[in-house]
Image (cartoon, rainbow, N blue to C red; front, side, top):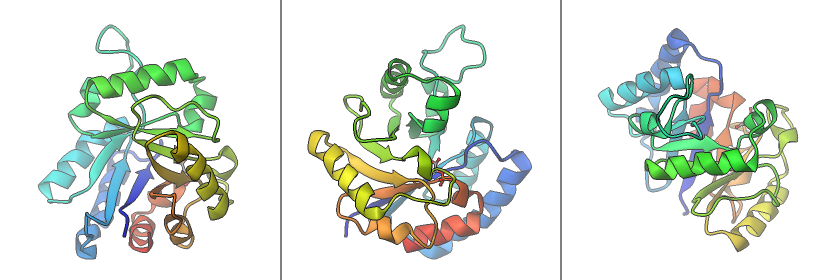
Length: 221
Ligand code: PGA
């Protein structure tokens, strides 16, 4: 059985107290006895919670990887308010780059996204690069790509597993990458995506805010 990657994108919701409660519920993941050769879970909290998640997972021996939701296109330096790849690397192994919410709300162009990917590589972070359609540019060296059509994000209307699989197949024919699907993934529909030959996992937004629901998604994937 091929390994499934399950990425939880917690977006911009939790404060410290909410994050602590989430972690307490999510701790039950230890009872699931996940075989890490079959399923790998990556949780992406907000910047302000990276340290809490990192220390909670390490002190409770929870084998879950951490990703950041964003990274500065600049290296360390006089860039007030930016969080750079060197800083993120202390807590995380992955970083989301190219999410449509960032492309749309923060005008992130291909040029900016390429700079972010270059910074991730410089400091040894693995980019999870999000595309909205099969023609989107994919930076050289990217190993994990997520297809997330805008209409499916937070809408309750996912793309069909057949279409997601077809797009993943086109992307894989041109790039040596793992392909994820994202957009309205739930515990009820996750298997229909992970069962597809060209899909190596999923990225989950809204449904991951409830730790119990995320645990079900992980189980069902
Ligand atoms: P959704 O979001 O699961 O709430 O549709 C996915 C994402 O934005 O990564």
